Image 1 (cartoon, rainbow, N blue to C red):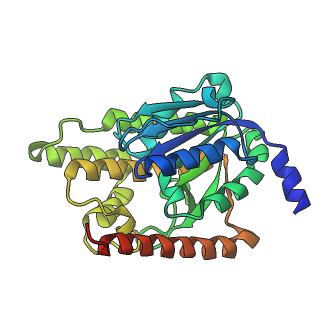
Image 2 (cartoon, rainbow, N blue to C red):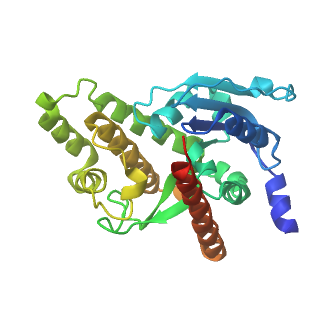
Length: 296
């Protein structure tokens, strides 16, 4: 325990971009307060990108850190990844030298958030000093239709719910996101649906495009279907497809660039993460069930 505390104590000054969708005003303020006062991170700047309802944060009593919080209304063009990209615009180049921590608010509703953040904090100093692109986060294994990353061949990828990217990895995130933004069909209709599908297949790759259609459009699309359920709105399906593509493509691009992915839930931490994850998901499902059963 002592060695771990010493490692966390050597923390680089980083920036954080939080994509907000569903947290209530009070829950969001509690999360931001805890992030700002946590001893896990030395935050230079925290940017909250509201892809859901905009809500002004009340951080009274934290005058010493007020200048380190910015809020912006996101476009939601590529869901999480457009929020990450737009949040970066509020950071100065010098502030990103030590890397940026990215997260969406599902980290605090469906995942063992503070266990993930404590584990991630242990590897920040190491990853920040690497001369190659590097990401730190929790991994998911390829199953079902895909058996490995279509670009790097790796059997795992880092989830976009919470990850740290060093300065070189941020460059890859930006370039990949810009490419998707340029290809986004802002005039989607039934008349050009076939053309849009062909353009997306060309951008994403035939194999991964087939996978996305399977998990996003098929009612029994496998283990990921509940998490990716977005109804039958074509434009939203395209947004989700591009966001999901970027999550996998970024991990693949970093490995192709001889970079590194540091998985915080590997080795001796694998079982602990799994137990916490399933317990947290159970509680979240129970809360959702109770809310649905409660009278309006």
